[in-house]
Every structure is written in structure tokens, then in C-alpha cells.
Image (cartoon, rainbow over all chains, first blue to last red):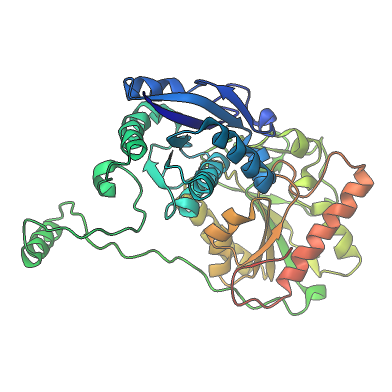
Amino acid sequence: MSLRIVHYINQFFAQIGGEEKADIPAELREGIVGPGSAFQAAFKGEAEIVATIICGDSYFGENESKAKAEIIEMVKGQKPDLFIAGPAFNAGRYGYACGTIAKAVKEELGIPVLTGMYIENPGVDQAKNDVLIVSTKNSAAGMRDAVSKMAPLALKLAKGEPIGASIEEGYIPNGVRVNFFEKERGSQRAVNMLLKKLAGKPFTTEYPMPNFDRVEPNPAVKDLAHATIALVTSGGIVPKGNPDHIESSSASHYGKYDIEGVTDLTEATYETAHGGYDPVYANQDADRVLPVDVLRDMEKEGKIGKLHRYFYTTVGNGTAVASSAGFAAEYAQELLKDNVQAVILTST
Amino acid sequence: MVKEIERAGIPVVHICTVTPISMTVGANRIVPAIAIPHPLGNPALTPEEEKVLRRKIVEKALTALTTEVDKQTIFE
């Protein structure tokens, strides 16, 4: 009898719709939907996707505990040997959902699980120590590559076979170390590595330094009534027409816009450039993402000193971490020069 | 972006819906929002009610900015 697999995908990969359908609740369908067919082919009869669970990314993100409970029940009913989520590539909410639900299935049902994501997906840090995440390319164009790595690992997990090191199996390092004997002794390996380094050749460290990039919180604002507060968003709010052509995904730049005298963002004057969420609500009233109207009221009432004259905006949708960090490092210096005392940053 | 603003020395509050992502990214002051496509609004309400709701979230954000924190904190 072949192994039973349940597959989790989002509304997009189920071809139900894009962002306008991201709020659909979880549903169970028998058999294969969407990318499951590529997995099924790669299993070569050893395993079968018996059911596919489809859930909207926003539904999962906004109703996490409810969605988790519903999906766990669906998985349980199928009695699978393995649960696969995704792959989610660089889709942030999808990655978060895949990591979270895979972890829950593993912990609550004791079933082996596997997912796949691009290394910069925010779902990776969330789940990498708890579930195996195969490292994929950053878009669905990498589906074939992802399936070629995920399918063999899936079969091993479902059969309960031992799993090799991350570098051999293609998953993102999960912090688990296993003792083994190297062919060469440490001194030889170290000298070889040093020679490569001196020659400018690529080499692989045996002990990557952990990356604890945490920033200490700054002291609180003392005197709000005299403070200048700036608004920043990754939700892509721009003047109507998107004058600087900020990309709807993988943004290459940010915008800085003057809001002097603007007391309300209206449908006629502002919109969102973001391609990663349903834009209807933000286009109707961009204050729903960038609360200019409320801060103007509070400025008038003397609750805050001043709303900063400019807001900064970009599209946080598949945008590289290095790019976003670079944008913010740059405009933060401008904010300092302009004597801004605090920032409200909104994300969608 | 939150982290780079903080690194530059400016206190910053992150208003977002999926707060665990904000925790993972490393924001220090976090305020939960309503929903992904309308973090500071709710199209099911009247515009007046919606503005009251938005004001509450912004007030919470300002409370976060005026509160000393020594670790990542979600202001529920």
C-alpha cells in the first residue's frame, strides 16, 4: 500500500483566486489540487496525495487559532503518513501559514511534516527549528526545483528513514547536530580552508556564527505633546498614479511624499501600489493603512506636537531583506536630521 | 525597516496584523492591527465608527512609544 499524504496549499495555488480570495476559510478536497500533481509524479507510486487542504493566507493569518484547529481536524480524519505544506517560495503570509500549520500537525498529531520556502521568507525563522523546511527559489518558477528536493525527503520522512545533513538533503539548517567522523583531521581542514580563503576561492565554514540581529529598544518619548511623529509604511500607500513607480512586488526603491496640509487620504488622491494584498480597502481609504486623518486630529488637539511633513513608503511584498534594510537605513538619517522623535510604521 | 529605524536611534512602533512575524523580524514595540488589507480600518463599520477604531489603535501606538520597554513587547 502506498503512503498517504495530505497536502496544504493556499487559495492562489488552488487557482481559486489572488488576494481578493485570500480570506477564504480552510476546506478539504479529496485528491490532488494544483502543485500536488508535480509531487505525485515525483513519488513514482510510492506515495499518494489523498487529500488537499486549501486555506486563504489572510484567513489563516487573521484567525490563526481557529484555522489551526479546523485544519488539524481535517488532517486527522485522513490518517496520513506525512503532511506537506507549500512550497511557499517568498510569499510571506503563505510561508508563515505553512510553517505554523506544519508545526501544529507535527506536535498535535505526531505526523512527520515537510514544507519549503525561500530563505528570506519570514516563515523560515518562525518554524525552522521545529519543522524541516526545504530551501527553495524565491518564486513559483522554482516549483520543479522545489519538488525535486522535497519529494525524496518527503518519502524518507514518511517511511521513518534517517535524514541526512541539511547540506545533503537541501533543507534549511534546523540547529540539530549529529556526531560523525570526518575523513581529514581538523588541522588539515582548517589549513585547506585558510588556503582557499587566501586565494579568494569559495569555502564553507563548519561553524557558522549565529546571527542574533536584535536592536535594543530606544528610550520612550518623554513629551508627546511637543514631539514630531513620522509615518512610515510597508503597505505601499502612494499618491494616486504611483508617481515614482514603486513596484507591486520586490520593490527596488521607496517613496517620500509631502503631506503638508493633507488632513485626510481620499480615494481620489491616494492608493496602494502593493500587489500582495487585496487593494480594494486601501484604495477606497488609504487612512486604513496610513492613519493621517487621526494623527491630524491629534495634532490639532495638542496630543502630539506635529505630524512630520513627509511620509516614507515602500511595498513589502517579496522585497529582499537587504533592500528594505537599506531603504530604512537611508531615510532614518533624514528623519534624524529633521528632528523626528518617533516613528509609527504600519504593515499590511 | 523597523529595526533600521530603531538602530538609527529613533523609537518606533510597529502596527501590524500578524504580530508573530513582527516578533521574528525584531520589532521592540508592537501594536496588533485589525486585518491584513485594512490594518487600521474595518470596511464593515460606518466611516465614523471606523475612525474611532483607527484612533484607538493610534492611541495605543502612542502609548507604546511613551512606554519604556527592555524587551520586545506587544501592546494588546
